[in-house]
Length: 180
Length: 152
Image 1 (cartoon, rainbow over the protein chains, first blue to last red):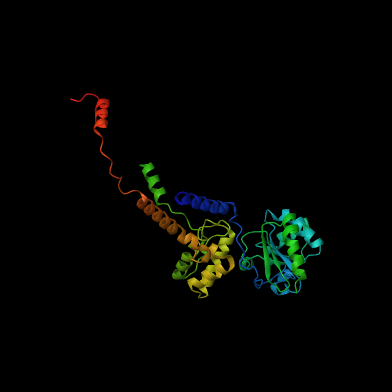
Image 2: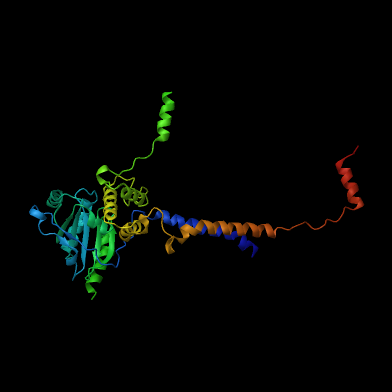
């Protein structure tokens, strides 16, 4: 008994050190999204074409009926060219990817898509960055998984790697497709 | 003299706020409120700066947003809640006391209490006085004298 009491502070300290040490391995950049299981915030964004007003854009109201990905990206974003082939593959596999060009001039967004290809089923331009704030975006790229009812179910911070797509997002999309 | 002046200048230097003149509200009282709120909001890009300090574009957007809300007549709490609803409590540089921050707020006091309790416990357990020693026998005293050598 005495021995247990004597060693208790040591055990308590080891526990605390392990707990805090684990905290150090977490990436503080990855803020948990406030939107999980909540409806996509409302937005109506202009498009990125050179037509007056940007042409057909993207509205939150259209996120209904089938699960979709909403990718927040920008031509100035360093990791976006790296993520781009994965987005093209996702689109080729038949999963719709929609985009929001964040704080990006429409002509720059267009140039990016002309250079790397355009996997997006729809694109909105958020040059003022207000929609991104409503989405709780902290950097580009970030991708939201939106279910059939327009609720956010998952948020990927940073580029979608092939591993993340195959291991996490694709299984989730398949599950959401099967949902009523 | 020059050195002293330089030292003085460096001592008096304060970090410049990132707020640009075009962001400021015309009403000084409202601007002061916006500054106070901005100082408590974390820049989610640079994390250890407030949006009042940060040059990041997202911090600027948030500063403008805070000012828009104030100009629209929102209270300080409403403005904070608006940002927290989007970015979570992490965005507050001083996190509120809630379920998941209890450890943060109460942890140090808990450790102090436990340590104090432990200290008192160990102090109490120490034997208060050693039991009375049996006095030396004549033979032992003689032996001791012999070992200690001749005394004057």
